[in-house]
Length: 262
Image (cartoon, rainbow, N blue to C red; front, side, top):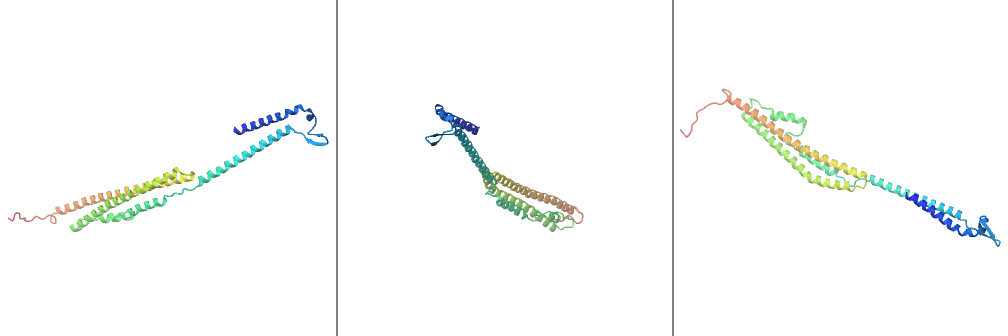
């Protein structure tokens, strides 16, 4: 709309100039009766042609307008290239190493589980060894040793769960720092790529936090499972000892007892 208004203004100005220049020539009809040149005293003299002058002005105005349009187009293309470069700029901040360290720390704590570890292949064997080896022929010493071993396994499971919980709590401060940094990078992103990369790293941070949560749930579940297994085995051991106590001939044998030195 502005370009069209400027063109109309230029045309109006050129027309007005042509009319102004042509007005004095109306008083000199001799110049209109001759073509482009008249000769006085044998010397050639160029006569002013207002029509030609107006056309030249219009041509110059159109040329200037075209140049301005080309300059504007080049400016737009340059700005478009600048925006594309910003959109393709990579995010200078990366939290991948810190997140990987947090995950490795939690994995190490899970890998340090005592006795029955988080190993699918060994769980059945260890359970059969510690919780499924009770029989009526076991001696009292064997039963006591088995009960103590199971108690130690249960206590170790509780200790492992608390260690995992402590490790996850230790990751909270690091995660908070990384989250603040990534949110700041996202808000100050220069282009689409930087904003996308900041968003992806925030998702990675969330995944790491979910991994910590799964680790805590797994460690707590392991501790609870060991407690239930110990309770069930203790009930079975109590049944065996009760049967042994009540079995005639091999159970309880009454005897003489003295009290108060009588």
